[in-house]
Image 1 (spheres, rainbow, N blue to C red):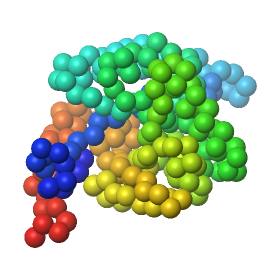
Image 2 (cartoon, helix red, strand yellow; image 1 turned 30 degrees about the horizontal axis):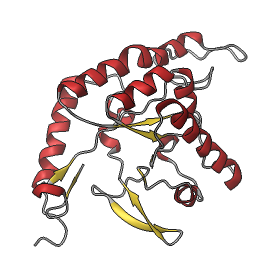
Image 3 (cartoon, rainbow, N blue to C red; image 1 turned 135 degrees about the horizontal axis):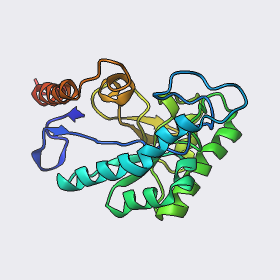
Length: 228
């Protein structure tokens, strides 16, 4: 979310971005987090935990798409390449309904430690998967756990991406120069994400709804930089 009077079209004071990470099918076969807390024995696939991720593709995504259609809201879905390959019909349906496909890496694993050539291949592979299935080329990127590497932004610029969301430093989007050209950062409202709001025992849907309303109202009242 961001507020900047005079910047947004049609006199809008507040811009809200909605994103949905599409990760089901991109997780490791064993060792992924989830509701089954007992660790699986080494060397065995965690079939139960993986079925939890399949629920997202089978039940969760269609429900979210229907809800967004109901309210005429468009979002960005940051898609893992392996998830797209495993559930191509889901990725295609997201784009068919008018939503943006962003890239989220080859699989649900860290990439910041990769040497530059390997990281380039990692990102390029996810782009290819999305293009092959949806017919669109992503221009936005989200790293695993919001952790880019020292080369990531330059690689994204080289691959014709225009923005990333792996930054927690501001409420409003901002431009920086990468490779001598402007590159947009759309900060991640991590406190509104399931990373901090869903995956804990005392989660309350009603409290989360109120948190979302409070966030919107606070930012809509904010005086934009340089406005007074």
